[in-house]
Length: 177
Image 1 (cartoon, rainbow, N blue to C red):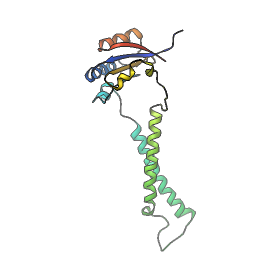
Image 2 (tube, rainbow, N blue to C red):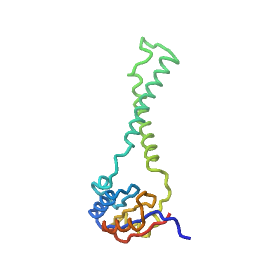
Image 3 (cartoon, rainbow, N blue to C red):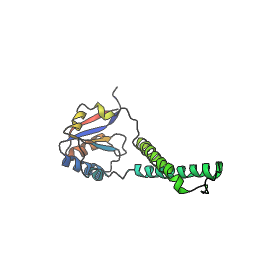
Image 4 (tube, rainbow, N blue to C red):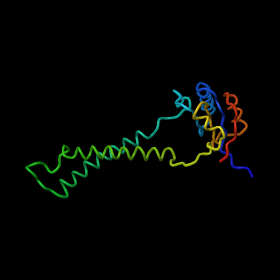
């Protein structure tokens, strides 16, 4: 009984080769695929068709929530719950609430950023099928890889292998789950 296939992995020797391979895979219409590189490759996100992350928007929402929470908390304690006039000062002033609002803005932004990153990246993921590939450690040193998942709607083992060969991929191997 053979294991369920995860997809295909192809090896590339240079950053330019993986850049052009990424454009080829993107133009072929694949959606569930990734590039593994030992170093950042300028423009690879664009070549892959990767859209801008939602994490900054989640962080902004967390920051606004933190600021509003701080203001609301100081307003509730000073102007509603425990009305105490000290030296003729108002029951609520944004100037008094600013330090706690500032701190809660930072705290909520940090939590939202970490939470958003975890949710959008499907973390924690303690294992990935690509780790079964014998030469995956070369992706940390001097080789580049393109992985196309079998879960992709366009995936067909023969056609996908032919596409990777056309893009210049070497050592095209089937990955198991």
